[in-house]
Length: 135
Figure 1 (spheres, rainbow, N blue to C red):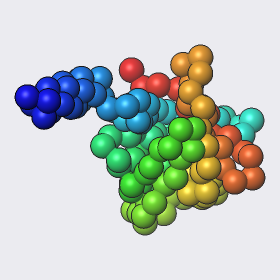
Figure 2 (tube, rainbow, N blue to C red):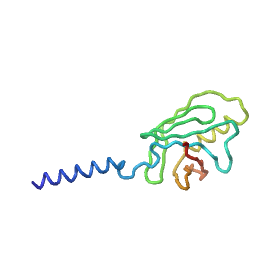
Figure 3 (cartoon, rainbow, N blue to C red):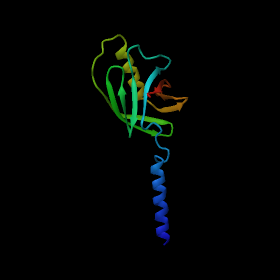
């Protein structure tokens, strides 16, 4: 009887955790963002940089190319892994440099913060990528 009660409690806890999305794990899951700034600089006019998170995968557009790969969150720590991008060349002034800076910071991401409707991802040098939600 004691075993049945224990199994019932374990099953109930598992159901409740599944209904609540786990133990608070990944606050980024099922969110989509548009880049508002790289450090203090706004993205170039005519470019859109996006980042979406879903089930351990992240990706979007980087101003010229599309990119994606795996990511992991642990508390406020974030790590992107195995990112791949398309290899189109964009000829507009500064677009490829902006894309390189964006993907470089994202690739070196160490932590993130979500506050006041924004997401900030910080690279290893402390530079921030600031995003606003895509509605």
